[in-house]
Length: 192
Image 1 (cartoon, rainbow, N blue to C red):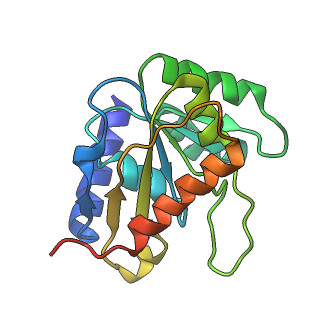
Image 2 (image 1 turned 120 degrees about the horizontal axis):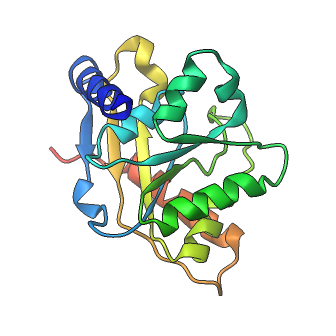
């Protein structure tokens, strides 16, 4: 119940206040699990992406967010689950595998944290590993201007063509391909 209430509020806010433009929804698989792999600029990225999709999606979030009073309670009800980024978190991996095996979509951020331009980033290989382990396609997602919410810039969300990988490819190579597709989506002109 709380999921859909927050979903509706997010949809209204991002569609009206921020004039959100969504492209590529037709690329989302209609059956089975898939992994949404997105760039990460703002704490608002999960609801910006999630409220584009009329399907319950699950999120991986850093464990520290669950320790924030009220907010931690809310994100649990939004189907987020914690990951400890300081270790190889087997519990988070098992949770993600269970979600994908059940046929549900999962949102991950290969950058691991909010990315600030000009900073060196070490990409996380979770999307690659989960895709290979579950044979789930990866849908690249570009979110544009979510770091400019205070300026009321128009938000754009672009869903790319699903990508499939197999065990013959190493995780670094897969992760780089995913990020390359996200960058292409960010830089391509929007339809007029």
